[in-house]
Amino acid sequence: MALKAALALAQIISIILFVTAARWYLVPWLRTLNRANALTVLLWPHAFRYVALQAYSAQQAGFPISDAGMQRIVYGDIGGMVLAFAAILALRHRSRFAIALVWVLVASTIFDTAANISGGIREHLFGAATGVTWMVVAFYVPLLIVMVRLTFWQLYTRRAEVVSPPVLIVPPREAHAMQA
Image 1 (tube, helix red, strand yellow):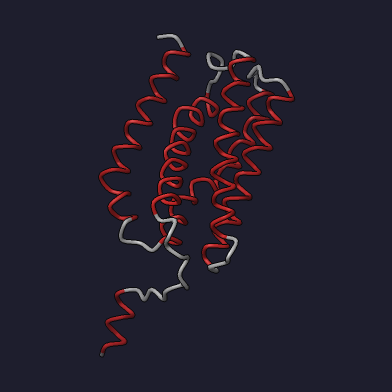
Image 2 (spheres, rainbow, N blue to C red):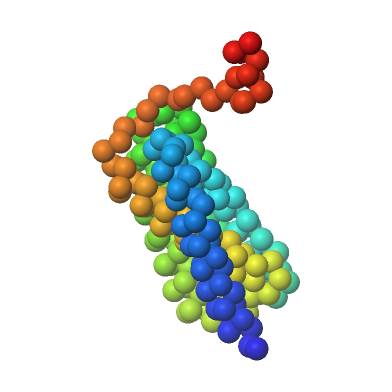
């Protein structure tokens, strides 16, 4: 099988599996959480977008990406990581800016993904990814796509729900001790 076909197949399989897992497990669980906690769960995968820094190693090892293309990917993903972590902190502290930060993350991720796809097409990169780059594109990018879709869903369907104050969650062992 050609590398390009294998990568496309891997991406499709990853999306199918992530969507299935989300529908069976994540979506029902998210419905039990308040808005802030549900959004926080969906933002954590974005906090690891610094994995894009591996592009420097990939280029050094022969991945034929231009310096401009590499910088676009790295800066976009580092920016997404910073936005995600800022939004997580804002949600945790129930900041009035939290939802706006999440919307900015969703919009910038959609733009970043579209720009990276068009850049990859322009530079003929889809048949060239190997090693860690192949795994990032085959596994992590589909995860982020599913997470951004679920985040949009949460933002839109729960738009009337205010970001409530934090709730103290007591672990079961401590709750039992408190009752005694």
